[in-house]
Image (cartoon, rainbow, N blue to C red; front, side, top):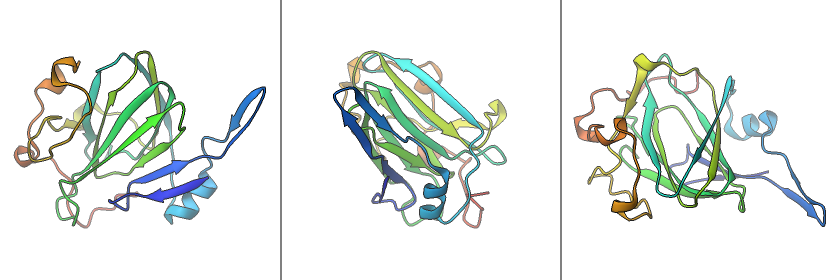
Length: 191
């Protein structure tokens, strides 16, 4: 496995080693020992989630407040997405900046999104299957979001605006500057 720090160093691209031959391929998609050694802190993933979506579906930008904040390890089993992580740690030097990475069944890349980040993705191919691990359970009371089209974030979602397909919830999220429920400095994001 190859671990790559992005322009926001806490967001990590993981490139697994793919062993292929005429029969197909084999890949280790997760090794907690290697990942924890690279990160320097412990992970405790407790739940796996999966979604299937068509082209243009945009899910996000979502996050959960403490005590149910989540680290996510995301990947694509089939198809392709543009995956986005936005730094919402109020006193971070990269506050309001984002990382966008294409994840696909072809490149087999994964993205580790730590606590303190809003997360979203847009589907770039029909019948895409997206899977992820989280280190905390979902809590409706702690569920929050940021507008996917916040002009200050200026995210290029790579899909024409008129082709985007969003949930009702995601069409009504606040702008980052209007969001009071953000992560503060001094919080233990890895707990």
